[in-house]
Amino acid sequence: MSRIGGLDPRFGSAIHTDDDFCIRAFRAGYRLAIAFDAFVHHHGAGTWKLLGMDHRRRAAADSWRVFCQKWGLPADAKVRPAARELAARPFDPARDRIPLVPEDDGAPTGGLLTHLRSSLPAPAAGAR
Image (cartoon, rainbow, N blue to C red; front, side, top):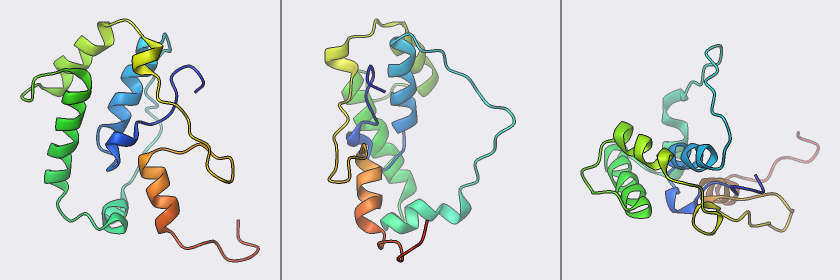
């Protein structure tokens, strides 16, 4: 994390956050892997509902536009060819590292994480 930093807060909706992070990690020399024995279930679009985002397609399009602007890609770029092109570029810490910003509790933050932390009620006393 110290080398590539955290999640880019420009992708606050969480769409393309993982693409951006993985591209930066790969360019920094980390190997990427797929866990075929893992499954993530997005139950009923819970994050979207929590954030009050009913327009997922628009949010996805907006996030892709931010991704393309960030990486200097044409607006009509396709994900797979764009990822291949970006992965081939060298890692530049000045450009590719997203600083981790400490919050009052010392935990790292990112766009979605910060929003979720500020949106959720505080845990009950004694809750884990």
